[in-house]
Length: 332
Image (cartoon, rainbow, N blue to C red; front, side, top):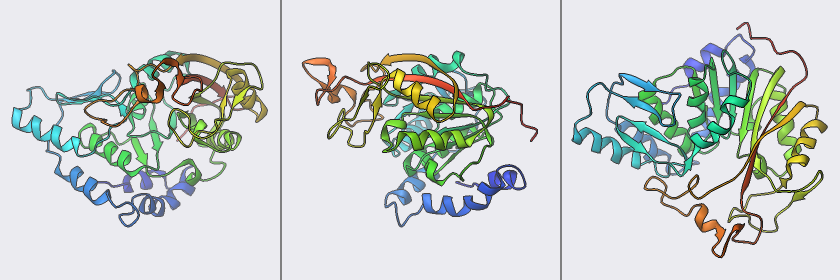
């Protein structure tokens, strides 16, 4: 069911040949049953999904998904829902497969709505989505005209979730690879647009992460970055002591001016602030498909403007920046 050979074959001999050579070993490591004890169960769940042929696909609406001309019978719909539940928790979405609404923790469509019309057109572009989760935004990028979308995420459950969706969506130009950006070959310079959303604050060295992203881009390519920020002036940065909103791996939360300064410092051009939004409990919340604690549990119960630790509540910014050069469509 999980087969990366078509992608490897397509990349051979082109500007991603170096990655194609590494990919078999990287996939084996990222989907190692010895390393990930639950992987055997998740893969069995993938095999147990009912066979349904989609008549219509939805890649450019809030609920990515598929449907048939005739509604599923209740037995098949129940089987589909219960099997997909075997891949709990579902974090990024939403999705709708044949009337089964996967109501994910995040309303990731809201994030997409905030940036969709303010970035360079994705039509004809090869796109990299770093930290993509189950690939929700990858499908939206494809729906907006990208010619190839590569998502990377080191969490094997999210990769299996992508393949569960791929079973029905069947798009050979969308892929999620089981790895982090550290496994991407250095100085690749092969992508027209690179997204990094919800990753920067998890990195001990944000500058190194920005350089990794920059090195993935072709001349004139665009970075689309979304991250936690604080209010403040140029130079202001929050380094939480201990946890932030109950997350233990949060390092640097810059002000928007500081973030734009970082981008200029390492050689990006024309950094732009597209949006700043305080995350609401309607955008990130517990659901039947993600039954663990969520944002409402991470905020001060007496002051929703603060995290449970007393820091400013999560505020997210979307910025863009470009690499030097004039972007030209790839000839591949």
